[in-house]
Image 1 (cartoon, one colour):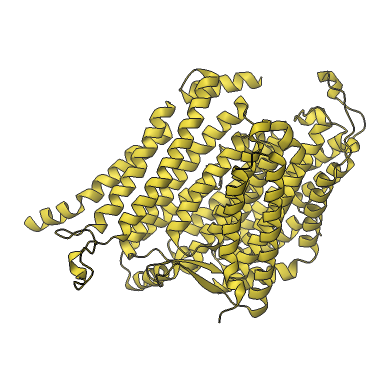
Image 2: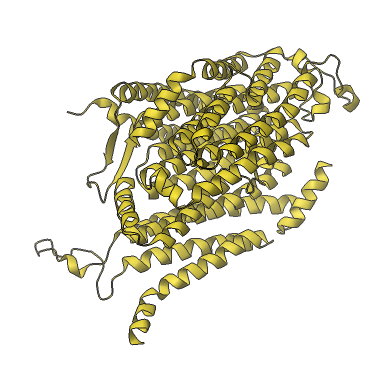
Length: 129
Length: 501
């Protein structure tokens, strides 16, 4: 029993990350409101960052910053820095995509005065005819 | 001392980005165009050199980015396949820009024309990076850059229709890249690597030991799903006709001809380098791709048949043609993938030819895009008429044209497949007939005498072909014919390149 709990506590970041990914994915796919879609996108991205950092982190260790260059490097005191680097890159990508989506949403709002994608599609169809 | 040509992949990507950055501070559409075309020429020449160097020695090389060695650092990799595709991408992009030149300067606001070419340079940089990268996370980053640039060139026309189309394209694209990102995170969690060769070793070890089969299936499924949403495989194609049908001519040509292919090439590279084609087959992913590809070939054509709008019809035909590529990959054997890569090249030449021709044809009828009003348009702009006829016949699969060779190799590959033979041949036959059913009437319509656009109050006008259009249609048309006649060297390079992957 205690073993099961130990495994659970090690994994629960990842379980939450996957649940969050599902929430974000469904919001991006199904929400009618464009702003909520973009929030969904951000939840989806953040969940992957959580997922990546969770297995880069090792309990009881610190960030690999060498304060004293003369001291011997002790590998076993550091966490894995690579996932953190990936997350940083991911955040940059996420911010630019969000900015682009928001700009596009703003333009659509100026033209159609609504944020509801279904209404926008109906209005656009009417224009075509 | 290693040979100089090993620097070329990095220099090509860097030059494309540099061109984009320089263009963004110039504020001049004309200069932006010149810089883009120069960059495309130089990169095309460099890719040709790289193709010659790697294909003649039948070798590939790995180029380390930065100081860190293999398991940690970032790498580029180039062989005959990558160099050849880079060359094709450069030629097609330059021709699409030239062919749609008039429309670019008419459709886009004068103050924003330079930004269009910035996006074009970014698109080229991201396509090249997706071709050359050896690091799967770098692949993800450039997928996102590609998405933004592709959406930006759709919305460049800036009318209500393209804005709505861009929104739909953006949402679907972001879903696709999100799925790719989570599958990549899972892959990293299982193996602890991001470089393709190291990933490959870990995955092979896992396959031998039989561990982690379910997570591997799930993550390959997510990855394939993500990339097939982005490359508009049926049933995820709903965004494509709007995005490709409403944007300006050059954007449509490049989106259909190149952007969709970038993702598929990345998928093929992952299938070969991270997994192997037999491992992918054992996960049953190829079967799914085969069925969806066959459905796409038929449903794309059926949809195109119902379409009265010329550009949307050509866009739906892309859905069918993407189906051919996935059908080839879905055969799950070497011969099928060779046919798929050949189709990538053939379609990269044919579809921009069709879009450029349709753009020029519709300009003779007051930019009206419905087939009904395009009656006689081929007589008023003969060059575009010939271009459309050539492209249409290639799609139908007339011998001596590129489309025929694809079908030939797909059919040959299908005879070697495990269970797919009959289904693949049937899908090929049905789809060829359907292609003929909408391309032949369209060709007849544009060459018929008389004109119908007066009914709209538009005076039909003769368009004399400008030099840019001539170069574009000529190069793309000659490409289609050459691929149909001297296809053996091309197939040779593709097979050699795939064998080296």
